Each structure stands twice: as structure tokens, then as C-alpha cells.
Image (cartoon, one colour):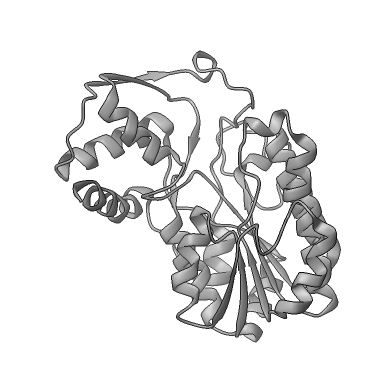
Length: 300
């Protein structure tokens, strides 16, 4: 199976690469190989690569920066996926695409289902939603995976930021009224690799059963403050020396950012369990091996 994997320099793509390489021939592509800022050139590049499956975690993910760069974010998050989806649909090539909880408005406390009406609060969320719609409109075999609060042991993410600040400061003020499920790239990569390993025909059936859209995240829920506490406690338990003495819970309005974040990022995982037969691990369970990796790297 020839698998085109985009965004290999990013967190999700980087986690997918070694796992997908165990089950197929992976053509890794970063923005140098596939320039998402130039969607008109993507079809020719795809013709040269000739994949049997496209896995697309590549995206414009600078949430606050997108507020001032809507056009640039829209090209990467919607126009480029449209070009890929149309190419794939015309050749009956399945497409797995990653999306986000930021497509939802964040009201209430009930986990969001796939058929709930999206109401993005930010430019980033709006561009990702536009990308979802473009892929659906292309009409090919596709699976859009909406996930939340993605982190890894390296890169630009909440875990690494908290670990860095905890070594520099005695007090951290962390938002406590946004609720979601921290989701590790390792878990995402393993889940996607598992469904791809069954083969193209098996994947097509599952995409159809999921209506091309499914929520995939860790189970359970917490706040950013709760996540930060788990990170700090976990790192200390692994012998990582930290300066921080206090983690203060604050409201969203006490930490203003350019882009609005949803207060409720809970995702209903029922469709994933039903269609793919997998029960995602609790977020604290999935966090443990990532903290092991981080702590081991920090000691080097």
C-alpha cells in the first residue's frame, strides 16, 4: 500500500510516520514536498506520487495568528484539502483528514456529536470547518477525524509549554473553565494505523459506516488547569526538577487571547467505539508514557 502522509514535520504526522511505515510504503511529505500555500500545484504533485491512500494531518494551526491571517489559514486548511480531496475522489483514493474540536461553539456541557451543528468561534475553527465541508463536497471515500487538545513529548504544545514554564517560574496561572480531553499524538497515530492496517477495502467500509466523519480523542475530561496539575505531578514523580510551587486556577476572561476558545471541547466518542470497535484510553492513562518519554529525554 502506497501511503502519502502529509505534515511529517508536525506532531501528528511525526507520530504517524514510523507506525505507518510498518504496514505500507509511506511517502512522507512536508510543505517542501506538497506546498499547501499553492493548491493549484497539488494535483501535479499527487499525480507524480500516485498514492493509494492519503493521510492528511497537515494544517495551519497557529490559532491566535490566524485571526490576522484568515486568507492564509483558509488556503492551507480549506483550499488545499479541497484540491487533495478532488484529486482523491476522481481516482477513488481514500482520504483520512484531521480536524478539530474548534469547529464547535463550546456552549453547554454535553459532549459534541458528529451531527451537532458547528459554530466556530475563531478564524482557525472556521477554516478547519471549511476544509471539512470541502472534503465532504468532493464526494470521495474519506474519513474526517475531529480530535482535541493534542500534545506530545516534543514540539509546540501545552505539555511542553507547561514543563518549560514549571522550570522557570514559581507560580503558573492556568485556565480552569475550559473542559476537554487531552489527546496524545501517540494514541492518535496508533488508532489510525490500526484502521489502515486492515487494508483499503476494510477502510472503505469503515469510512462509509462512519458517514465520513468521526470524533477521536482520549476518554474522560479535565480542564487545562487539571491537565497542568497532572503534568507537574507526573514529572515530579519521574524525578524532573521543577521550580513551580503553585498552580492557580483562573477563568478564561483572566487570560485573554486573540482567538476565542470553546469552553466545552468534550467530544462524543460513541461512533468511534461502534464503527471501529476501539475504546480510547482515559487521558491520564495515555499521558503516562508521554511523560516517561519527556522525562527520559530531559535527563539526557
